[in-house]
Image (cartoon, rainbow, N blue to C red; front, side):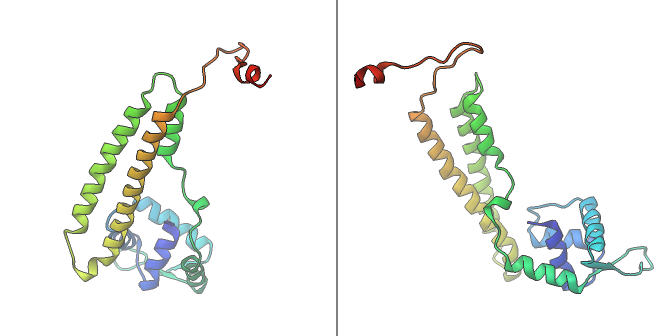
Amino acid sequence: MSIRHGLLALLERGQMYGYQLRAAFEESTGSTWPLNIGQVYTTLARLERDGLVHPLPESDTGQRPYEITDAGRADLALWFATPISRADRPRDELSIKLALALTTPGVDVRAVVQTQRSATMRALQELTRLKYASEKPEDLPWRLVLDAMIFQAEAEIRWLDHCETSLVRYRPAPSRTAGQPEAVDRTDEAARR
């Protein structure tokens, strides 16, 4: 999720200052994505620079609230109307980790898969417990975030099962030393003659 658009969505509810925005963001996402207050103020500065929010005069307590501008509303509406592209998502560290584990000498890839599976299973159990801890209607945004996290954990476990099956059939190519010519398997060539 874009912090930028998250803050714009919160400001669409009404004027807020930085700490209110951080609290509302965390409440809306069920505290699954904690925000650093520095991120909030840095993002607000960029939003102001881009004309998407407008700072209001400081209150008596020294807090400066912000409000969304018409340009901010248009940007937010466009964000809500545009599907998220798979290319926009961050790199998957687990995929990269397993790919590198396959090619790094001395790494037990099966152990890496099992360690991740255990951690993901524990996370899935905790998320499921949290989901059923509250059934209040006002908790729906939080439950939807939890559902997404549950589905992602389930998909990761299925993918890890697939990785494990693939590892059973995996036969690495013989390694060669630097400067040594690649060994050529002539058995297929001889069979074709």
